[in-house]
Length: 133
Image 1 (cartoon, rainbow, N blue to C red):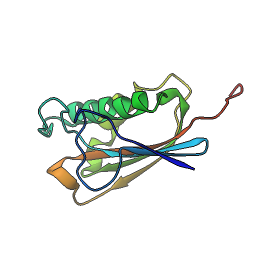
Image 2 (image 1 turned 60 degrees about the vertical axis):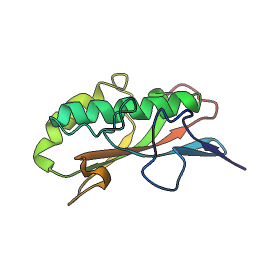
Image 3 (image 1 turned 135 degrees about the vertical axis):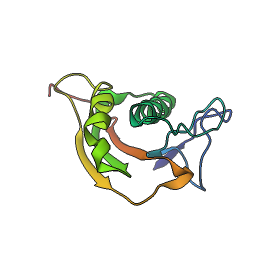
Image 4 (image 1 turned 90 degrees about the vertical axis):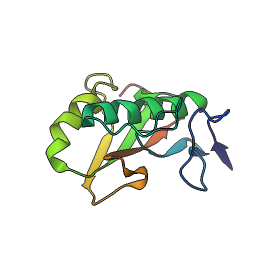
């Protein structure tokens, strides 16, 4: 059975016809988040660090709505328009995870993203019982 997760009250607008996340069994698939400010709807288009921070905060909203958190993430995909921003992106991205408990990740350089942002991140999160890792 699938459960569709949508952050209520327009706190996190959607760019298209899809939910913020879908829970399928013990897995939560979180739609790629952009650097859109949920308060204003405006895209954060400043330095890459600010964009990544906004994306991660948006992911945090979706995870909270689903009753989980970053520490349960098992896979992330990062789409970035300028690979010269890779190290700066990593600095902010990694600060959202407990040391030594980063999820697996793929990073892809892309020509463009919806909303004209420079970074998009999606997640797969395990929501079942967890033993010691």
